[in-house]
Length: 378
Length: 124
Image (tube, rainbow over all chains, first blue to last red; front, side, top):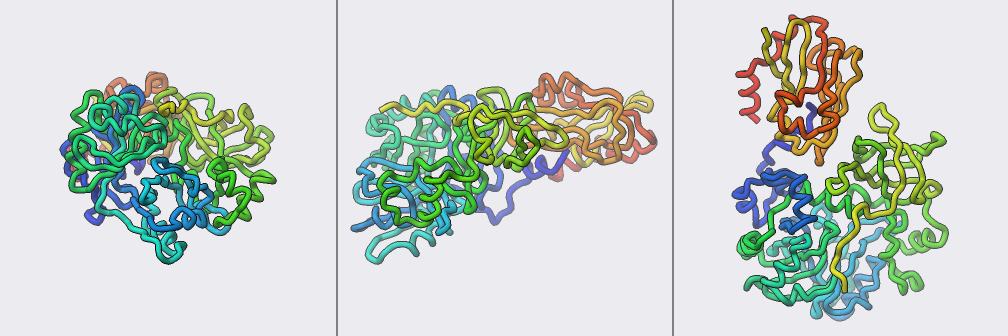
């Protein structure tokens, strides 16, 4: 057996940071792994497959406290954010959240993030691996007079799955009344929280930000609710892949643009007309002329998963692209993958080939997501 | 009589005459998690000592399985191809991967015995 087994098994070195739920994870029997500089649970006793399926059928609690939480406030905060991202934040109403991208000057993606309008402040949630770089990048790009803060004193918990709404009806009716991508500030089981109705699984769910000192009390509350079980990073990854959602550093990075990543919908209508954001020249040009390559879904025929970096070849034998995320879909019971392919072979239904070890595996381009989203309807 | 020995790569090898049966250990299946795919070598393939010749994949990751010694693959276990979870349920039994005829059966004695392998696992 090859190295990954040993890597999975190895105890994380002491230098890793821990989340406020570290002791709880260990009590719950989690297998901890290093991820983005943190020691985090990859799975609990039941394993990735069971945790994945439980999220789709009931509800799972994920510790995502490693993610960066920032706030930005002051006159002109939304306009300032617009110089760094292609989103229309001046039109983001209080109580609403939007997915967006931090772009560099050539339209490459520095990070993907959520921005929520809490009335008196914008809350920004970024990837753990990009936290420090993002904070620096945002701070550098702001005009004077705005207040920009990081919140390392806060934890973030995600409750995901069809049973999540029922749990919140009992613990926080204000959250249960939120529409998809709505946000509110309200106590959950008596604990003050910033809540958004969103997630990274394709299911209905909530992301709940609380003070680190109250994180364990909240987690214990949520886990005591019927149908709620803890789930780790393993299930989080297979769930987001089924939902066709990008993982930063894997599916998108500084060398991919929003248009290539099939995230052109994040470029607001007004922003397309006006420009004025980092990378606008490249992004607006690609919107007009089309990108050379595009992120697509792939369904391999047969049972072999095609992992990241698998070469994709078109049926005429020419190089077509590479897989960026691939694995086994527990919901479909079959392999699924995402990757970038040449635009001329990117249409759903196109037959392609995957070079997995010495095998040539047929695959078909399919629309994303692989498993339909089940977000709450307005 | 048969004897089971182990490799540092968490495979078990059971020798019966000159034929060795190879599988992954219980420790390995536990570390891998839910096995969802197994690829086996073609019978007749000549393999070198330590050559990657099979693949086992869980939801999380893919791992190579190596030939524990040099020889020729004689038989594969199609049951684990059809039902990969068999590796989790019976790693040391019905979840075996392949059988091979060893070029030098004497090399088997150089593999770890059960006590040495247990010490290795305990040290991880």
